[in-house]
Image (tube, rainbow, N blue to C red):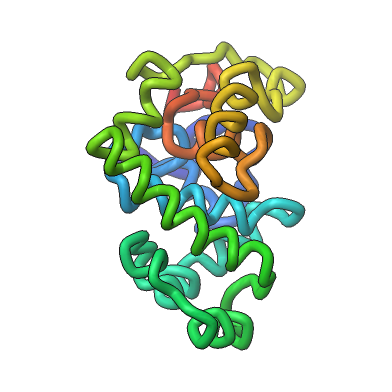
Length: 189
């Protein structure tokens, strides 16, 4: 097994943070096709908007418990009492607009799933069913959105999704491997 501390990673990874390193090494940029996992990342990216990813990453397990393991079938049925419980849950980010958007998006997610059989199939069509690989050499090479994220965001908005603008979607695309933005010298590339 490789000595993980000596591996070259993307320049944005804090090397003194084991949870962040684990996320980078084992999840970020790796293609995801499982609808539940895709919904998890969409939801976490929404809660991250305006905050640091580290904040969300450290609350992820609390979110997993509070949001029924990101089961979009259950979340789509949440009512006011569940929203109130979530608003009182100190373990998650208590933002009513983001909570409401998550419930709305679960309903829209199910609609897309019905139309395309899986949300994954719909989503991966935006990149012709294969990861887009960027040649990142330095931190300034990273972008916050691209043309695909803009187009996809417009389509999601037409479908009734909330809080999924181009920047949030681009971060999602990176996280689930639609876009491989690992730096050229990163061992994950």
